[in-house]
Image 1 (cartoon, rainbow, N blue to C red):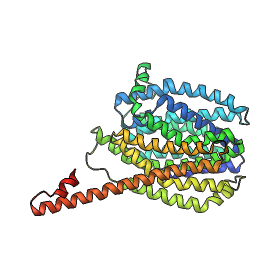
Image 2: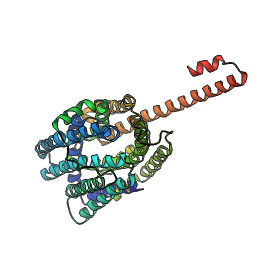
Image 3: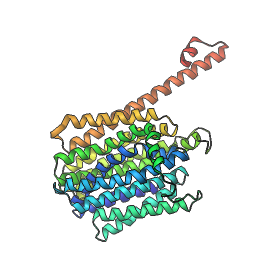
Image 4: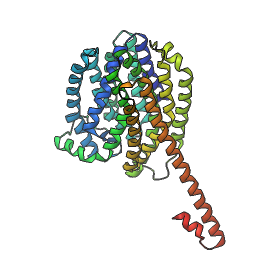
Length: 410
């Protein structure tokens, strides 16, 4: 519920900003976060997931890499982006402030991951929701969108740092124990998840970046508001999927129970995603033009296309995160890479004719195809396992191993 509240607050922040006519702020935020995500991924690779699932040595390397290498690189990239997009009608101050939001959230992500690893899900979600509420209050008080988000991100970093350092683990401050040697080792340690992180970043950000090259800031701002709402909804169900991943990680490192992991969190997440998607599809015209006050009536179709992808995106993330928790990184990489390739193909086919409908459709089709394929694969494995169990039962009753049972076992 805390994650749901956080997601609703994210949507509320964007809705209020859009209704206040801050589409320029939203456009600057969307473009900057999309671009800096690429910068962060190229440097950090799969370090975010490695920080949750790795050993203490690996986690120190990830922290050193992020603070000593990634943060300075993101700061430089923010200045370059501000110079590049200022001439295209984007506000320089909004672009730079949005870069600060990205940097602060990147650091807070480490402490959020510490709370997840310690199974302190309520504390993690409460810190996230409370700071989002703080940002919303600032926005209502009259602060520009990017300024409110920057203040919220700073409060988020401070809250998670206090929770981790004063919690049961009594962790040392984030900036202690860092070294360039550890930062360099992180490049070798996280390469197994590098493909996954690159593919995830491409799937989530490629449409916005491609659209920003061919559309006006007004169109990008409207699309950015809707894609941000979609990503906020994905974050809600993603939070639920962190639970089984953390349990699997702790089991793999002998930090917790070694029994089978319950599927309850996955079922709840997928069901929630389906219900949310149905509601968004039905209410899209009101959300886009009534709630958000977007000046483009066709934006309702963009939101509907994105909402259709939500249940399938949840299935895909559930599979990938479970494989990461088990240490089966190649399987997670294949799923993420398949989605990214389909998104890229969809955007490339449209090329210069790309519009928000095409960008949203590329995401929806890619997520849906891979989600259906994974469900079909799981059903096929379940059916084969059932046949094998029935064959073994018949063989046991007859007292001799049957050919069918031997084939089924193979």
